[in-house]
Length: 97
Image 1 (tube, rainbow, N blue to C red):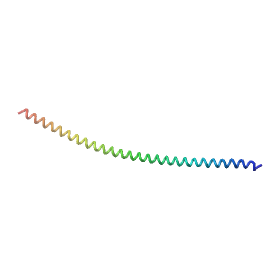
Image 2: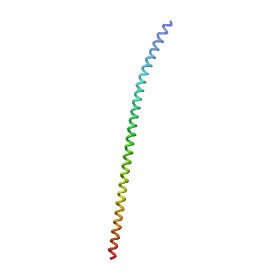
Image 3: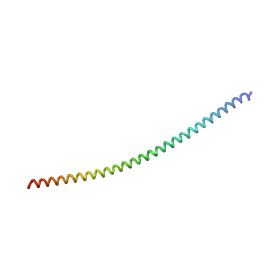
Image 4: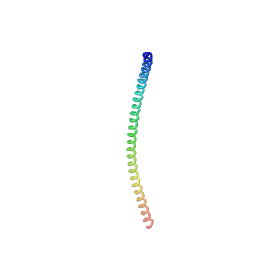
């Protein structure tokens, strides 16, 4: 009688062991996929961070160029105003004569 109860229990145990092995394999595959996804996300984040750093450097260079252009434009404006004042003074002197 013990053998009759032992055989079904043994079959049930083997079936449970087989299911555990299958679930373990699926879990391992899922873990490997998750690790792959995480590595890809990390690489994407690093690329984005590098692109942001490059964009910031380009923005700094553009800002420096804009400031230099503004200084040149301000200098040209001062020169123009000084020339206009000289012409006005010369015109006034000519009208006084």
